[in-house]
Amino acid sequence: MDDRQYRTAMGKFATGVTVIATDVDGDVHGMTANAFMSVSLDPKLVVISIGEKARILEKIKQSKTFSVNILAADQQELSMIFAGQLKEHREVIFDRLDGKPVLAGAVAQIACEVSAEHLEGDHTLFIGRVTDIQLEDAEPLIFYSGRYRSLTEEEAVTLK
Ligand code: FAD
Image 1 (cartoon, rainbow, N blue to C red):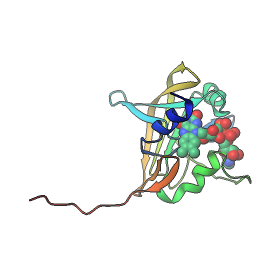
Image 2 (cartoon, rainbow, N blue to C red; image 1 turned 90 degrees about the vertical axis):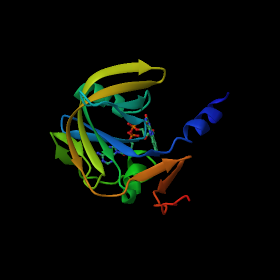
Image 3 (cartoon, helix red, strand yellow; image 1 turned 180 degrees about the vertical axis):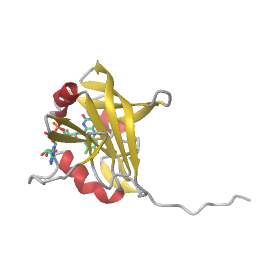
Image 4 (cartoon, rainbow, N blue to C red; image 1 turned 45 degrees about the vertical axis):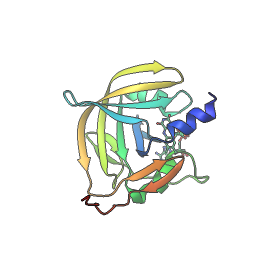
């Protein structure tokens, strides 16, 4: 099995798209990520996975806090900005939720404090204790097989 086959297989798992954001001394840094899931309901815990080369890694270690912003269908440009896919720098304004930087218009803004970190291979898993949540009534952005997509609603089929 080579790296390409592995990446292709993992890309077959359709996900939403998030921007992880953190703040060190008032300097906000964001990064696009889809390696995110809920871990526990009681206590409320989530996990994110950050690559060893990502600049945000040291920043989260320092701040011990982060937010997860689940992007809406009309926020593909934000995903591209925070994945470094746009050449020119864009100014992005962040709101605050429980003191953490968050993106307005996201389907969900989730404020977290780091409760544990685990180095696994070339990524670090951060377990976040959820301290606050803000929800927006909007459709999510989808990522599948290396491409951005949107949800389409199929009509329910009644089987006789
Ligand atoms: P940088 O390369 O330093 O920053 C990324 C971009 O964000 C830069 O262009 C920077 O200018 C911009 N930026 C940062 N902060 C601000 C700000 N305050 N205002 C304006 N612009 C700002 N990588 C992972 O490790 N884990 C994942 O789960 C993951 N999932 C991904 C999912 C998708 C759909 C995509 C497209 C990429 C994913 N990546 C993931 C890759 C990751 O997003 C990129 O490798 C990213 O560029 C690395 O981030 P960095 O911290 O090194 O940030």
